[in-house]
Length: 78
Image (cartoon, rainbow, N blue to C red):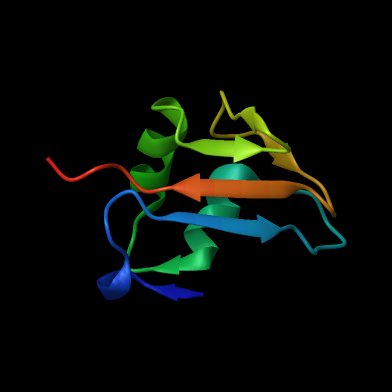
């Protein structure tokens, strides 16, 4: 899990899903970062900043499976 205070704009994080059960993408990324809401990650998904297995995720409810590769890019500073 990553502490939200140390994440700089344009930072990218990579995860391999390790779970026996399927999980929604928005729930998975919310669990990886403390201090960020699920709605924040839903916005990143809608903005094309989260990829699954090299493809841009298009749905917040995308179902992840064991072994999926998730890449999260935080938005640039305004």
